[in-house]
Amino acid sequence: MATYQNPILPGFYPDPSVCRVGEDYYLVTSSFEYFPGVPVFHSRDLVHWRQLGHVLDRPSQLNMDGILPSKAIWAPTIRYHQGTFYMITTFVDNQGEQHNFYVTAQDPAGPWSDPIWLEDAPGIDPSLLFDDDGRVYYTGNRVPPEGQVHAKNMDIWISELDVATGKLTGEKRSLWQGALKVAHAQESPHLYKIGGYYYLMIAEGGTGFTHAVTIARSEHVYGPYEGYKGNPILTHRHLGREAAIVNVGHADIFDTQDGDWWMVCLASRPYGGYYRNLGRETFLVPVKWEDGWPVVNPGKGIVEAVMPAPKLPAHPFPAVSGFDPFDGEQLGDTWNFLRTPRGDFWSLSERPGYLRLRLKPETLADYANPAFVCRRQQHMSFSARTVMEFAPQAEGEAAGMALLQNAHYQFRMVYGMFGGERSLRLMERRGGEDKPLASAALETERLFLKVEARGQAYSFYYSLDGAEWLTLFADADGTILSTDVAGGFVGAYLGLYATSHGQSSSNAADFDWFEYLPLN
Image (cartoon, rainbow, N blue to C red; front, side, top):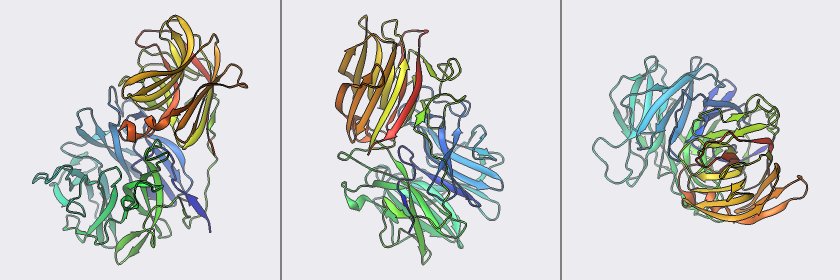
């Protein structure tokens, strides 16, 4: 029997949503403060996915100037109707205010439209249902009109939407407040019409250890909704904190062209203790229907690491290399920026075959857009290497590699001018305080850098020739890259970094290549 490995998208890919068009499946996930926003993937067998690009890939679509960590883009939903794709999501600002919008495209690879902002649409995690009669319904969450009975008590609400004008046209009506009397953080509503019923599936219990998926149904779109007596239909909270897969929730269900049903959901894989450096990842699990209700992974009711594959023809895509020689005209879809990129600080054309990063005054400790080109950490153990040509001239000029959870928790291995001398430094930033872990006095203009993580032990190396590697620092505590230490909702990133530490500079660092590989 063919099997597949969970997660289907390893690393920081939370809040997955899927739509099917014929034999093709399209998936989007949250992106928070990283740009481009909302990665979009394509599959034909639900196991192999290739990234098509990003939905929000233009600054005109996504302004994240000064945005705080773990704000910005939350919980997208993707839907398809009569030749048009719709992606609807929430932008959360620094005050915690929630702004909902959608964009459209004829091709999920783009281009996608500029945002259509919705007025008077409170809450987060919006979703759309295109009903058989042509009506379109918006669902979201909000503080209950009658008030909260306890903290994080939320109400799932619905309104009709005119997608042509971008206006909510109907009365806001309450639908459901979850499966349990003590339920909290009711969110992620997805409304489906299946077999004569409207099914409302939500997440509740919060995004952490007690995360869960629950469901209700009604014969009428506005209710009343009957909660399933078997709720929650999916959770791992009863498995304890030693489970290999935890905080399962925020799901979307869909059928295949053959009539089988599947669910995507988020979950995390803690390691080295209850630490989740990889963030919340995308998992796949089968669904069966019994007596008009969905049963997730029948007989087991949990998400497993290895599961029987869907009964679809295998459709693998060419493997994406972990080696980037920087010889293309554009950065690959693997790469992101921290917040909306501002200024011409990077180039693949100024020196062909190299990624040039111009030093920016901004640093990774700022709520800004530093010269940082980064990718997700996707494995518990990995190796990342690069070679850099850089000649620091002025005090504070530095470039190299960085590993980031947020502005307050990170590692930076940078070569620069410090105290009037050139040296390679490893800095650990924990709780907003910088601590030097190691340094090596060097005089070079070409430097190889490497980080290896084996579980929560992160080791840092350098070389002058790419053959003989010298240890800068071994077994640094990688738990600072987990949300369990640093807080927030994102996974760890790593990449290439250049800064002039608050000063103007015309200097630049050139990176010849970058390699990221999993380690056994």
